Structures are given as structure tokens and as C-alpha cells.
Length: 315
Ligand code: NAP
Image 1 (cartoon, rainbow, N blue to C red):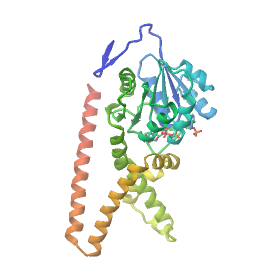
Image 2: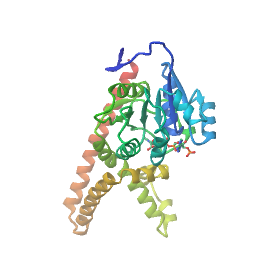
Image 3: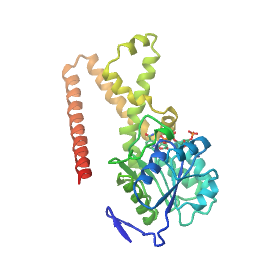
Image 4: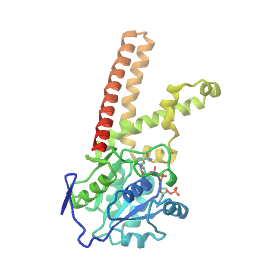
């Protein structure tokens, strides 16, 4: 056994490479594969995707060492299977896996919602398999597809793993180690907490950006609105350029937590609206001041984290 980053890893006695199969060679799957190829460990990166063209690109870009056209035979040779497909395709892939011999293999995923993945696994397998370690990297971009993939995407970013009570601790250690090799910081979190936190910090802001741009674009004078839009509009709406299918899947997959966060936001907005209606300038100003000081606190937290990461890199 060797210990890395406080994690005990079962050492590969024969020194044969660990076969890692990435299913879904897009932004996240491709970046995971590319990061592991670069890290210098004895990993053999295999890639499967619905699209043969994506597989070819992933091989020619050096993202995976081996492109796999046949799912079953790829799974039979894999030690680790990383599911990096869109959220609504996760049940399909789990269904394909169900019935194959998965003994001794570790399955994990990168899906943005964890409750729906776990529910799908429970329905398909009859229980959540011990060797399934649900995960979610808190990194990405508004770009998608294999050509957007890059090694280093997860460096100094958080990855949340949401193991269940029956999750095999060795499977958890191995997945933790793979993310460590990608340069990520791993946190373990309860499934429901993950979905609630992400609904507020990621899903809600994306929904607001999509809705704002859609509402303004529906205005007959939208040409003028967009012509005179300044930096604030551009900053606030950058994430509305994200992949609509991915965000559709997230809105459907984490609907309960998203609705709760939308309700909380709507209450806050209604209060602000009412304060303006009543010309309650104290309340309006107090809202903006509270928000600005919370934003400053958040920005200094991010700065501290960035300078600690730079310090670690220079050691
Ligand atoms: P992406 O760039 O669109 O990549 C998804 C890939 O999976 C595409 O190549 C797609 O092929 C392929 N695919 C679709 N269905 C498949 C199937 N049944 N079997 C095999 N391959 C299949 O998406 P992404 O941004 O990497 O997102 C992947 C996952 O990461 C999602 O679950 C998302 O929630 C999660 N995630 C995304 C981000 C982000 O910022 N993008 C961040 C964290 C987590 P086609 O292109 O031919 O459909």
C-alpha cells in the first residue's frame, strides 16, 4: 500500500497499467482523460463515445491512448469506468453496464446532479452498487465537446464525491486518487447537501442568466437593448452561452432543489421590488450594501484560495 495525499492506494503489484475507460469524450470526460495522461502515473486511457468522430478526435488530439468502438469489450478490459455523458444519458449508460461483469471494477461519474444518478442506479441495479462512486468536478466552461477538452482543467478546482453508506472504501480511495492526479481538491459530501448547494451556487445563476437573456431577446426592442448593453450585462450573462442541452438536463435532474432555490430567490426579489414600490430607500440601500459586503467576502475567499494554490505550485 502507498499513501498519497492522505489516501491509501492499493499498489499495483504487477506494475501493469490501470485501465481507465472514459465514456463520453466531451469537455469533462476529455479533460479528465487528458489530465490523467499528463500526470505521469501508469494509466492506460481508453475512450468510448456514441460518436465515432469524437473517438477519432480524442485519439488524434492525444486525449486517450486508445479509442474503443465496442462498449462491452472496452468495459471488460477496464479497471475504472468514468461516466462523462450528459445527465439524461447516464441512465442509458448504467443500463448498458447492468448485466455486464463489473466485479473488481470501479465505476464513477462526473454528472452535475447526484440524487437523480443515484436514483437511476438504484432502479436499474436494484441497489446502488458498492463499486459506484458518484462524483462532480466543480470546474468546466461554457464550451463543450472533445475539442474544448484540456489537461489542467481541474487543477486547483474542487471535486465533490458523494459516496453512500455501502460504497466500497477502496473504490472511494481510488477515485479520490485519480482526481488528486488531475490536480483537484476532493471533498466528500452528502448527496442531498450536494444537490442543494449546487442548486444555489451554480444551477440558479445559470437559470437566471438564461431567463434574463431570453426575456430581453423577446422584447421587440431587443436590438437596441443588446446594442447598448455594457460590461455588466456581458458579465452577468456570460453563462447564458452554456450548452442548452446540458442545462436542460440539470434543470430536469435537480428540479426539487432548483425549485426551492428559485423560490428563495423570488422572495428576495419580491422584497426588493416592494421596497422600490414603497420608495423605501433605506431598505433598497441596505439590500445592496449587504450584497456588496457578501460579494467582497466571497472575492477575498477566492483570492486567498488562488494565492494558496500559486504558493503550492511554486513549492
Ligand atoms: P459534452 O462536452 O457535451 O460531452 C458529452 C459527451 O458524451 C459527448 O461527446 C457526447 O456525444 C457523449 N455522449 C452522449 N451520450 C452518450 C452515450 N449514451 N454514450 C457515450 N457517449 C455519449 O458535455 P460535458 O460538458 O463534458 O458534460 C458531461 C457531464 O459532465 C454532464 O453530465 C455534466 O452534467 C457534467 N459536468 C459538466 C460541467 C461543464 O461545465 N460542462 C461541469 C461539471 C460537470 P455527442 O456530442 O455525439 O452527443
